[in-house]
Image (cartoon, rainbow, N blue to C red; front, top):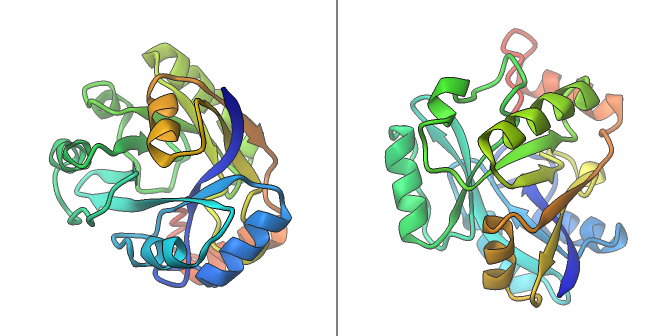
Length: 220
């Protein structure tokens, strides 16, 4: 058994981040991460580029999928999941690729998220209990943790990074049999996880709001 630090929620310039794939890889290594999941919005092109470039860094391809009712993180997929599907259809397609469906920032308001009653009826594989990008991160961590425990689901944490500097601000500690992506995904599914957390600096949260539009308050 090995303990691995994996940031499971990272964006690149392939969606709405200012960080290139090279930036993500460089910072992840500098901060001592063992691996990352590239989860650009509705594309896996960034993950594909990272897979072709990274050495000594575990790259798990992923996607933040926009459904008609909120966002879902797809971990460990090899083909993109179409956007604007019903959540249950998106999850079915994720599972057909042996991927995991994780609900990001489930308790934070002003964000595209699935309602609590919807989450409880879906075959999801985990809850992102800590997102470094959210304001009042510790408050929403407690709420996310309570939700995961109430539902009996594995806990995960991610940076939701949209800037190179914030990669690795939060990560999931995975107790896996080895460093293969399949083993990591299996460990997450079985709940062999913990979280490493610290909120991103306020300056990056402010920049994130400005980039997405002050009127929308659309955290991803």
